[in-house]
Amino acid sequence: PLFDAIERYEIAGLDLSSLLKSRPALRIRRSDTSLVSTFYGILVGMPRSLPRQRSAPCIHARYQDHEAVIGVNDARLLTGGLPEPKRVLVQAWLEIHREELLANWDNARATGDFFRIEPLR
Image (cartoon, rainbow, N blue to C red; front, side, top):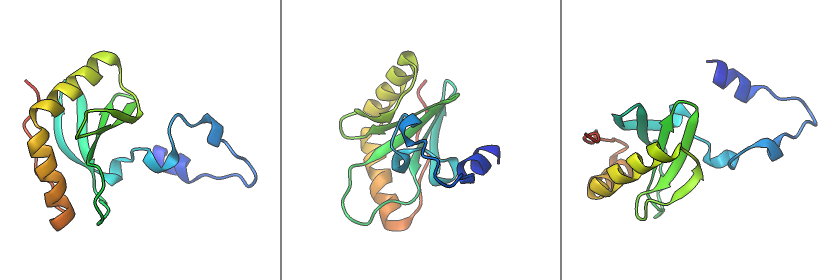
């Protein structure tokens, strides 16, 4: 609730966009992400509102106060960041489950539903 309240708070004429680490359109909001897996304190989700046109599949990863958006096809960091050891774990998990993630992306675009994916062990 506090995060949402701060995000809605605006002061006319005050522009703090230069302080953002990532573009506002790509910031991860808990309400915009469906959780698909958790492991080693990392939450991995997929965006709930997927565009109807073909777009590159991505995952949202969150660890403590760190957030990242990572492309499924190439495991490339698109925005944000994670501590190096956690980023490596997420990328390893992504490599193992790439086919499931792509199927999940297509299923979500068609039906709006996501399925859970096995965590990294």
